Length: 358
Image (cartoon, rainbow, N blue to C red; front, side, top):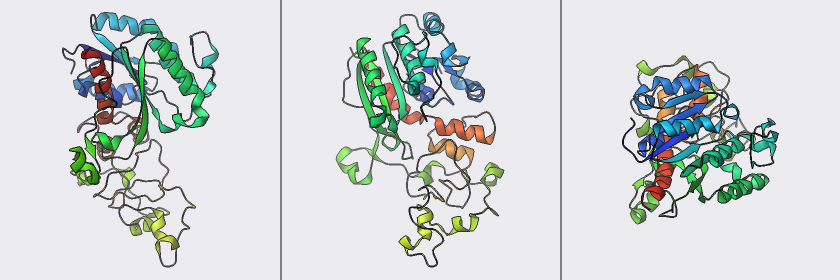
């Protein structure tokens, strides 16, 4: 899938390849991908049609030197612009003590930020032309203020202009309400205020000229047949199987409470997690796909079953036929932790445009 693009990417914390796929879609070939989870690297290997020319590194980023990435750039990207992409796992911030070591030069003095530090270490060592850093929305919570402020200080001292983007996957053609933040840096010049959106709510379609948000029914259509059956999907006989059947599409357990006027209420509103017995409606976008859902945590299919792997992947905007390696649990984790490729595409295009139209 590599091509003659003048911009290439180095991917950190690659996971199942969500950001990487977005980079390829933005015509920015990924020359190197790395992750410490073996199943993730095996997933990338399975998709050789995409990652056949990508150098795959299995290992902990703490133990992979910046020189390793520089060597790959020297071999594969001579005279090309380079961006670094990655979403450091910060759910929750790791408490490992690597940050106190001398490997992390000019790092953030906060134990929660050790993997953020590794991202910054690579940036400040190899000096790419730009970068895309992804994380959970809560990174902007006041309790993490020092991490974000330190991150910005370090990249500004390294010569980068930056933008912090609060993004919702819905706006980029993903049928899923999924909010994330991106810190995007460039040594070029941003041409617009934000990445280009492709979709909007029905009420804004006329004003924006964008396509309406995608409903999940059209995105996962075709996967309801018996050939896609998974033992994991069966809820029959489970503790709340009969309750799930009574929840209307697009609602959660609150449909079975006095709050909703349900006779002989089975639950009390606001006493459970909001995604308890949460059921998709085919006429609405999906809620956020999670990496480690509990047994009765949704979203569930409107046919009263758990979602199948190709459905979960489609909701995340992985291309049809993309292969995943590992147990059902591992695959759910890989898909749930991924950046939706279409969302990633918009972010990579944004930094790419700042570099090629100088």
